[in-house]
Image (cartoon, rainbow, N blue to C red; front, side, top):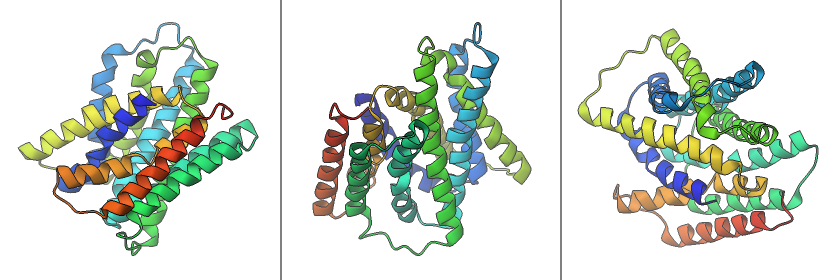
Length: 278
């Protein structure tokens, strides 16, 4: 769980930074994943890796990172940032339901943890979020949530089947799969941008830290926790993001709601960590 908390802190800065970029969504997606791929390419080891496993990793990356980022960044064209934060609340529910679907079971405690996490995050953002976005934006965010949740579950299952794999040795394949999808979308759109110094530094942070290191540690952490904990942790970035907004970006928030929401998510993690959850 510490890894998931650390990554949530990295991602807490992303909301405000992405808002400041103002760049084409396909370019941002390709740039972040391209930088992440550069970081992990030197660690990539394909010797002894079955072609089927390699293709599975590429596919997981294409979904969890490529499709997720394209849909997420594109949604900024139709929705305000706080609306996007609101609509990401379904991610933990999707993680739990997808994990149960693959296992052909229903873990009531894990589902309860996911519901508590959603409720906690909802306490924080619902009051300030005016649900006035277009239907297209809502669909894009839900597609992004589904892709990210599916990728987490698939990677967790693949690692369980191939315990001899080392995450850093193969993670470059996930970024390669995601980058291929994002680059194709960018070239298809014909996106062309000019970066200033501030935008360049923001992209470096988003690509190297938030995407490169962040997704690696997140997927690594996902293999070490119960499904319910993974579901609950998907929304921890929301109270952290609000805290960063208060302390770093000078924004305001409803502190009582922040405290209540944080307490509910802490309860969700406690429920998920009970030994009966697998």
